[in-house]
Image 1 (tube, rainbow, N blue to C red):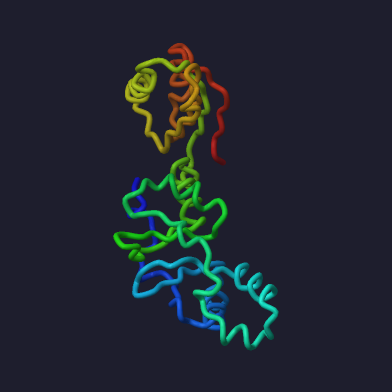
Image 2 (cartoon, rainbow, N blue to C red; image 1 turned 120 degrees about the vertical axis):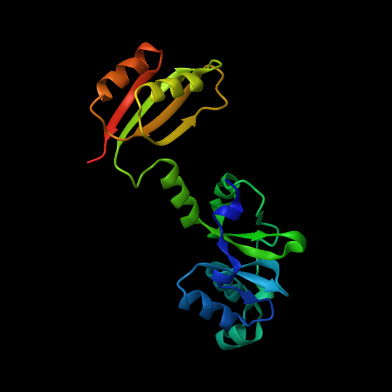
Length: 211
């Protein structure tokens, strides 16, 4: 999945101009109860203003509070000017980039601001990938990493007409073993399905049924 399919579009984002005062920037953050806001200049992304950066800059400035809020601009305290993602990047890249930032701007050509990806968006996609919002049976199992194993799994799923909610694999760098987490709708043939998996060389590690 590409970033453009999951990002918050520009018209739904809260932003400030690089010439806006710190007072206005802080008002935007507090009014909308957010931790960071993109700073723009003629629609171009310049960086991110966060509560932490504002407080840190104030303590280091030695200025009186009122003077700092009114005289300093958003451009004076922005960070992460080079930390962004493009709309053509794969969504997984956002997970890494959001490790140290509450928001990740999405830009197009010439750094034109297109939208945002937030930590909530990443978690939401994570929940979707694991089918966490749908009831079913979660089966964790391992398989020797050989050619055609995923295809074989697909054949078994089709043979037993299982309704797949999610399928996630791990250990892609391990040449010997791969772990797989499969979530399917609960059916009466579950025991037969599990037996077939094990007879086909898939080692069942854990089974969990949603309450």
